[in-house]
Length: 162
Image 1 (cartoon, one colour):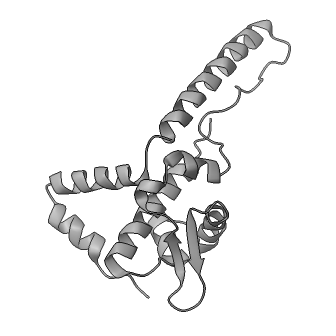
Image 2 (spheres, helix red, strand yellow):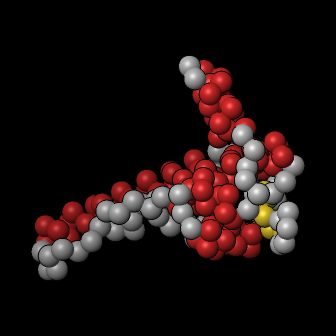
C-alpha cells in the first residue's frame, strides 16, 4: 500500500509558515515552501490553492507576496487540514481484490473493510481534536530539550532568501 504523505507535508508547511511570519512578519513564498518540502513550487501552489478555498490560508500576489495562515494556530485542527486535502489517504476504503471469486479473500476483505472504516472514524475524530498550536507546542518542547538546540535554533532563524 502506497503511503500518502500529503497531510504530513502540508502540516509541516503550515508550521513553517507560522514560524516564518512570526519571525519576519511576511508571508512565505511558494519557492520557500518548496525548499522546506523538497518539492516543486507548482505543487505547493496547487496544494495551497485548495487550502485557500477552505479558508485555511490566504495568498498575496506580487513582490512581498506569498502564503499566510488565515487563522491562528489554535483555530485550525489537523482534521480540517485533512478535509481540505480531500479527506483521503489515511486508510484505504477496502483492500484490493487480488483473486476475484475467492471466498477466503472475500471473507478477509469484508473483515478488513469493516476494520478500516472503524479505524478511520477513530482517527478522524482524533485529528479534529489536535490543533496546529498543539504541534507547534510539541516542536517548541522538543527544540528546548534538544542537545544541539542552539545550532538548530540558529538554522531555523537564518534569514530566508528573497
